[in-house]
Image (cartoon, rainbow, N blue to C red; front, side):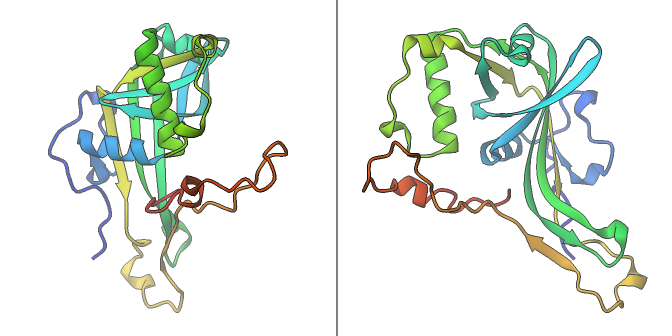
Length: 229
C-alpha cells in the first residue's frame, strides 16, 4: 500500500496555530523535516496584511540554523513591515509528482510543504548579514560565490535582511497514488504517479560574456540529485 503522508510525528505542534487539522495523518512537526524542505525548496511565499488587505508575495529564502532568512530592498514595503514586527505566514513547497486516479476528484499532487508563523527582525550586524546573504547565493547556485565580485558596504546596506525564527511551524506531506475507490480500480484507465523534478536547461550567456568563455561546471551540474519542483 503506498504511503500517503508524513510518518514521523515524534513531536507535537509548537502551538494550536500550526496544528494541521485537515488530513492530520500527513502532518509532522519534526524540525529536521522542516529544515529539509526549506533547504530543498527554491522559493517561498510570504503572507502579510496591510490595512486589512492580505497580500502574498514570492521571494527567495535560506535557512541558517533554526531561522528562516529572506531579503529585499530597504524600500520594499513587505520587508519593512516584517522587519518592524508585523506577523507573517511563510509557506514553502516542494512538488514531487502528479497523483492520478480514475475519477475527477482523485487527481492530486504529491508534495512536501512547510508553513511558518511568526514575526521577523532585521539582521543589522554587518558580518552576520553578509554571511547570510552569501548563504542565500550558495543555496540557489552552489559553487558560484568564488566567481562573484564582493558586495560593497553600500550594497550590503541597501539590502534589508529579515530573520524569522522557526518556533511555530508544521510540515504536511502527500505521497502515493490517487487513492481510488475500490469500485473504480477495475476501470480500464491508467492511474498512478508522474514524478516531477527541476531540470535545468542549457545556460544562456548575456551579451557581455566574452566569446569563448566556458559555462561554469557548477551550472552544468546544477540540480543533480535534486528531487521535486
